[in-house]
Image 1 (cartoon, rainbow, N blue to C red):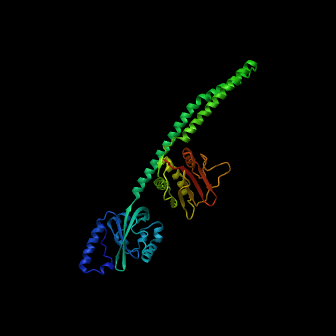
Image 2: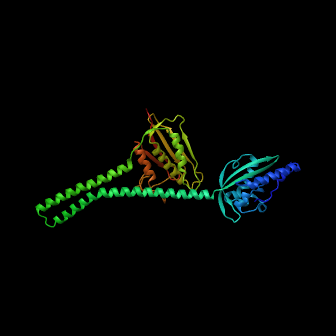
Image 3: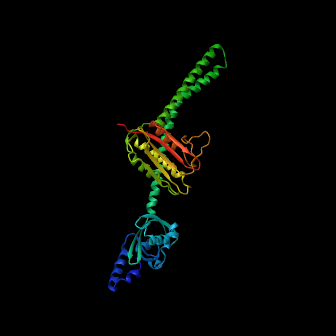
Length: 387
């Protein structure tokens, strides 16, 4: 149970004795029963009220924190900048954190920090301000989200390995017969050469011809599998690109941790025409391009990503994704769309290759432009829906 707190002096000075007592009783009831941790501070950042839930969360009693600066309960940058937040608000009246729920680090009595959701409201009593913070512990929620993320990764990896295994099994089965035949024909030709008379030479020629036919068959199997994987099928329908762009920008930031997220701005023609495309596949292209840009801007001081969509002529709409990052300079012999080649340490080199495959299936072309130190731009075109 929270210890008795007193009505803030700036408020009690303005109230008759009975009203102050009634207000104090009401305040104690609220502090004892409010489910989330609630803390009230004055305009100097000093704690004037501390709820029972706050005592349980932070491990302090109300007496221990009464009159202390709220910074003792903060971790991260907020510990250093909180007084500036209050000063700037009182000076300018601009609300930067007030009325906005956000996730911050809270510092407990034992020195550990935990993630919490913080919502702040303010009240004006004459020339004085009181700020009320409601704090909710997110540790359990984050642990659940982290576990769910791990399960999703495991599921994705399992699905990918299953697909690879299935394809490898199919390819091994398909290729086994012609390659075995090639080996048998070549071994027979080698043995026949031990007695190189005209009759055996004719048989050697026949065996080599048969081996050649089987090797061509093996090549056709590989090409068929490659075409099946790379081209696939598209469900081309009339698509409004506006919601597709919005969804892709949101999805591209999922799973990016440990870095400042670059802002993404979009410039879309007001009278943008409908295009003919596979909505899901085009969204995946934009997700891949924006996600690559976000990762490329990890060390850029003022990162910015721009998605531009414009009708370039009567037949085509062009989509471009640009960033102001370091750009790329690939070694000779490698292109940005090469499969299994990546400039990122942990990259698989499939993202841009998949983009190219999808755009190829839409009878389009994707182009990469970059100058080291001046960012990169990827652009592609889609056909307008003329029906």
